[in-house]
Image 1: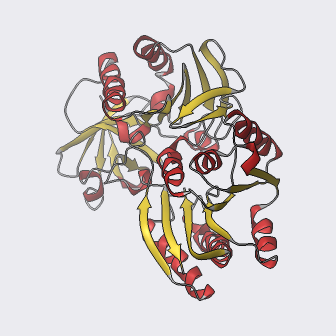
Image 2: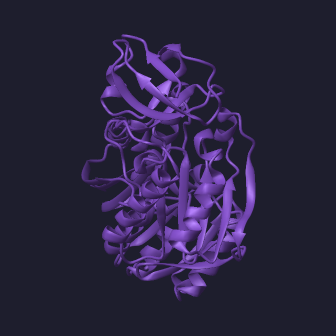
Length: 391
């Protein structure tokens, strides 16, 4: 087994539990490493740090698998998958769609597996998983026994690993283009083959359910609505009206179908528009709401674009705050790990200051328990969902 030795000044973060070793943190390598093979990592004093998969084509040179001196064989990968499945079985109820494997946080770096009823949607994001693709898929077949497995590795991050994007059926039946999943009191139509991410935004499930608990008697605006998950939750939670806005006509069509399926069409209206423009027009028209939900795509995917993202988040929150009736509720989310929670909340507070309104934070939530976080790796704690009232 080849050995990578860390630079003396680059050990603390990794010893502290972070699972990534960057190329610039390595002092020397014994031998020429092969993409995806297991290597051992030692500190500058020669002490064992861990074992991980290596990729010389990536800036993330090593993704650590374990801090123990153990054998990384087929049984190791099976045990890790079994552990991930057990966590979901022990703690997750009320839905048949959830994340089975959450990459680094489940000790399987670069592997994402989502369950949608009897089907699995798989993303392979790192070389260490790519070279073991057949083993991983067969293990999922043995343990989960799905009706079919579909791959959604059509993401640009694969190119950072020296991998091409890939999408298509892997095993079994191909999922239908409109697969119905259950989430609490409502159902949602999901397109695993072409929908966002692996088919749907599963990470927002607990926040959708919370919105359903808070929406009774309220007029609600759901901006960046996609296929209307928050809309279904609010409408079935007793909202008097829900206005949903998304730039994608296909997403709006999915949302309308979901509203009809759940029997709430009469209280839901749908608008195909740029949410920024719509918010501006609604503010100008002096429209008022009792709850406004802002769940935009990530405004920043790098540290360099954070200033622009801050401006974007402030604009939409400012307009939303101005349109809330006294005592109205703002539900505002960010899915970018580059925007930490403290910065995100301060942006919302700045928007409230500019509006002359008084903001009270009631809660700040993240993703569900099927999307665990590594405390030592801030990158895994990406979703923030702010709840507050405005007076």
